[in-house]
Image 1 (cartoon, rainbow, N blue to C red):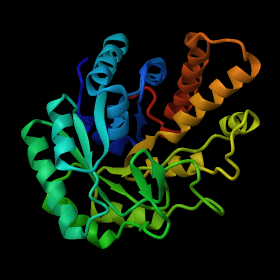
Image 2 (cartoon, helix red, strand yellow):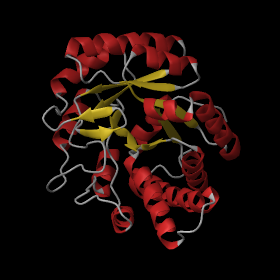
Image 3 (cartoon, rainbow, N blue to C red):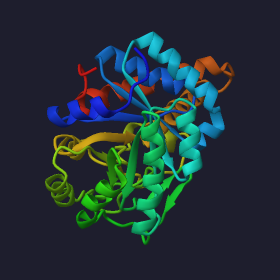
Image 4 (cartoon, rainbow, N blue to C red):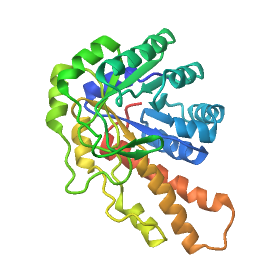
Length: 309
């Protein structure tokens, strides 16, 4: 199996009322944990690389890790740039073998967002690569994305048809109440399913993307806090809300913070119990296993894409 785009994945997901997991990768153990989980449950995958991850791990190293994962698993895997913010970055990833890119012009005025997104779409489509755009702004912090609650904005359903038609973008990330990072809600979690429903009516059959969708699993938050961390009040998106979104127009659900929490919590717990150990394999091995089990749960019980590869 070679690298694929998300086009066929999204078509099947929309018709089957499930979502594809888009998991951010930064190093070998994360790639291994995610792809081993997907192989065990026979799920399609989108592996996401942010600009920060690309800078940290190096584009070539990440691509070779993903190529190795394809060889080991035989799964259809899409490699996606997460939150590309410039044409130049998107072009570099397209030229470097990515099969999907996101151009995030959500911080720009509507017309400028359209102009930038269409520029990326025109180049990407000429190379057989698909593009995700964004309307609306999620609050929170993740890598280079930093949006205050005051600057966050729900997606306006009145804009989505014009945006998609004028840009030719292949999928659309929307803002309905999720946020980046581990502190998503101050009160009770709430997503604007009325906005999602209206967008689905206006763009029937069109794939929608949900960012900031980690559930912030209490087990890992507790591991971090009891071993020197400071994350009071961390609260994520309830899994039942994600299942509902996946049964509607949402075909891609992004998960990053949960991976970080699982890895960090497991490593902190390991050192608390084994303070004298210094072999990276001894603590990265359990962290990889934690990611694998977390991803398996997401693929089966949240996204519903097990058995769909």
